[in-house]
Each structure stands twice: as structure tokens, then as C-alpha cells.
Image 1 (tube, rainbow, N blue to C red):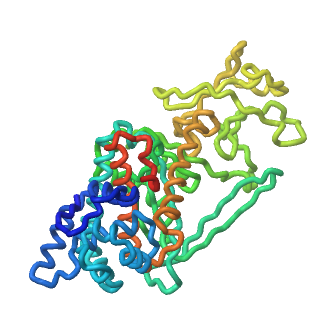
Image 2 (tube, rainbow, N blue to C red):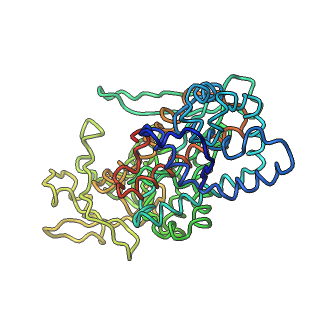
Image 3 (cartoon, helix red, strand yellow):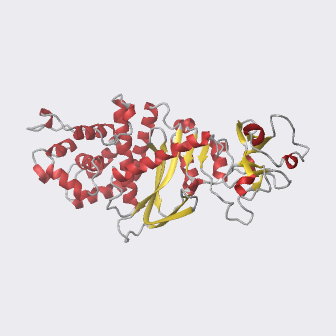
Length: 444
């Protein structure tokens, strides 16, 4: 906790402090920065102390809290705002002469690069503090990657990243949009209910999202075992669609994957629909994203008219399978293929209709404990939007859509400080008995 205890002839406590200054004070009170500041002060011992470590650190945090996109912008604000200078810890009698120059901030940032592990430890302590304050924090997680364009094309640490978006327009025609950028990528896991960061990494832009998911989950288990034990689900877009990872999440970590499936069939010669059991002749097929269907009209002109989705009847966890029911019996679909369906001696006849069980191991990419085409999946998948909203705040509130950062070390530091401020703001609201405002970053 950074505190300033220096007397002055004039104090802003005499008048009402602005709400923004109060917000900064609460963030500074919450940050677990004592260890870092003690080390920095010890390293400066015996040298000139024109610009106190505590004041420079607090002002750097103030720049993030108030969304300054550059050090130059922060310096202008400090020179203009005497109240801000005092709350940061600069001598109130020194006027704007006490504000460091840009190169002095650069020296301070380089010192912070040498203590990157302490910055990381501060982030982890804040995550743990939120976990202690919120009993359901971490139950539902979401993950995504975010483009972080570099400032200019002369950044030696940066490289090119590509992300492809595919979908279907309102008129049914498919589209593809390709985004390219030069810079870095933020890999972020957030709590999907509170929209707060849980884990993050900053890599070069070319690093694939899917490569970082499981290492980050394993790191979460190592650093926050109690929060990891709370985790029930992980939502992600189809960029994380991998059978081995989905299996590992559920089997090894007891986390239900709520991850969209890619269409890997439609463009192949075999077509979109595949037999459930390719070793036998049957009427049960699998769609390109895992939809289980029955061929009810083999002679229909349109392919879409040949198949009807089977009624999903739930998950049988003990059998590790999904259960489906005949669409003709369950939904009254007209079936013109009954004879073919009943050809197998394994098929039982009756008013209830045929029951099909699809084991998870049939295709771990397409089949998981949350059926891709169920209402449960649709509701759970909405949680993925939480990480997009956090990414938006990273851009709009903390200035990453207009930054002047070069170098991966500076990008990691700046991102780490921003996410710490986000967590510290949440802690301040929770401790003020207003947990519903935990995600509020602008209101004082």
C-alpha cells in the first residue's frame, strides 16, 4: 500500500477532493506494492533523490487510472494539476518543478523492467485478494486473444499476426474477413461473471491462441490452486477448437469446455454429413459442427431436407456420452426411411422411438459434456462475450488503442500495470460494500 505522510502549508484536505482523486487514492491504497517500493528505495540508497521513488510510482499509476496514452500527456497533467501532484507524493511547495522529465520516467521504467517478476507477483496477489472477497470468483472463465498493434514498424520485438473471421450473412452466403497487424498479442483469461482478469500473457502477434490455452490453465492451477478448484467451465471461440485440449480440460482439469466447433467437413469431397458409425450402414449422421441427425428422406432434392436433428435428451456422465432420441417419435417429423433405420438388429422398436448414444470419444473436438447444438451450450457460450468486453476496456479505458509503446518488455509491463489497476479498482468497490460496481472503471 503506497501512502504519503509529508506535511505541507496547504492541503487539499481543507477542501473537498475531486471524485477522480479519491478514486486514485483508493487504487493506491489497494495496490500491494510495498515489497517493490522497498527494493527500489534500497537500490537508490546513497544517491540523489530529487524525484522520490514513491511519488514517481504513484504518478505512473495515476497515468493508467486516468487513461493517459503517453508519458508526455501524464507530465502535462502533473504540471497543471497541483492536487494530483500532492496525492502522488511530490512536494506541494515545489510547484511544477518537482515533476520528472520524460527521460527520468524512462529511467524509472527500465528499473521496473528489472523487477518484472515482482510486478507479476503483485498481479497474482490481487487475483487472490479478489478470490477471497468473492466466493464465486473463477467459477466460469472465458479466454481470448487480442491484437496489440505496435507503435510504428521499427519495433524489433514485434512480428505479424493474422486472424481470420468466418461466418454467414443474412442472405445465407458465407464470408471471410482477414485481419493482419504488426505487433503483439494479449492472451487473457477472465472471470466471465465479474469480467475481471484472472491470468494473462503478452506474446508476439504470430503466437497462435490455441498454443497458450492449456499452459495458462496449468499456470492457474499452480499459482491459484483454490481458484482453480472453483473453475467449472471455460468459454472460448472456435480459434481454440482442438480435440486434445477439450479432452484435457474435462478429463485432467474437470473444467467443462464451452468452445465453438469449426466446420471441417463442408468443403471436403465427402460432404458436410458423415456417418456416426462409418463401419456400418445406418441412418444416423453427424453434421460439420457435431449436430447429430437422422436421414429421414434419402431421396429429397435438397441436402438440408434429407436430415432431421435428433432430439437431444441430455448427458449421461457415468457413460461419458450424449443421449439422443428419434426425431419422428419425439418431434413428429415425417420419416420416409424407417425400414433402413430398423434394418439393424440393435435397433429396438416402440412408441418412444430409437435412442442413440454418442460417446465423447467418438470425436472429442465435436462432443463434450455440453452438446454444441443445445440450449445449455448457447447460454453458456454467451459468457465468452465477457472477455471481449474486458478487451474493449483495455483499449478504451487504458489507452491501448492509441498507445506509443515499443518493445515487448514495455508492452508486458504496461499491460500488467493496467490489469492490476483494473483489479485494484474492483477490490476498492468490493471493500466499499458495492460489489455490483466491481467492473466500473470510470465512476468515482
